Length: 269
Ligand SMILES: [Zn+2]
Image 1 (cartoon, rainbow, N blue to C red):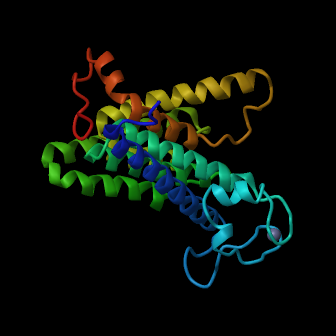
Image 2 (cartoon, rainbow, N blue to C red):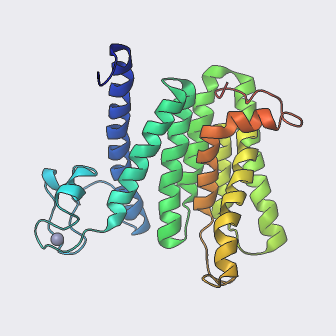
């Protein structure tokens, strides 16, 4: 049996490449999110070091995913366990990046998808670690999205502006009505995501994000594993909603064509 026909080889190579690129992006995003949350500079004198013994890590310790596996999750110098967080973020980023490549191929939609995915990963990590979404990193995604919309002309740019408005406006409404639960960081997160994805995907991201949040949070509340006053970071649910929409938005838009136009809009098709 042949492993792959020759016509599949370019696709397989590009999937392997996107796995590797995604793992490296994940490693970078994780490191910068940790430094941002700890109020440290991204660049400068500081090299990556073991969280436990502080030894500066060398190249073989820093290969995303593989170092963790070959070192069996332990620091080469002190033998203490390495936080699984590094490995988990690298795997999530590699898998998501390759899956988005498989979904969209080399296209403008892929560029938008990767921007949304990588920025959302960063914002989710700071939200989970310290309960804070940095406005500047939320808004940066929206600004990048608007820049990427310029070549497609006014309709695409208006779509992005509406997307940001819907995302921000809806969360702002929830904040004002519920007085708690959601914060302005969540509103800024959706401003950025909406500006990148446009109004239809922005509305869908809110819908799917709240569904995901409800499916996970409500049972935990019911089982009393969570209390109502516990600070639950909601950014990751909104981010997850937007990433799910990157994959299935077009199907949902067609399903909902009664009140949304049947086409999802540029760059989604
Ligand atoms: Zn160590």
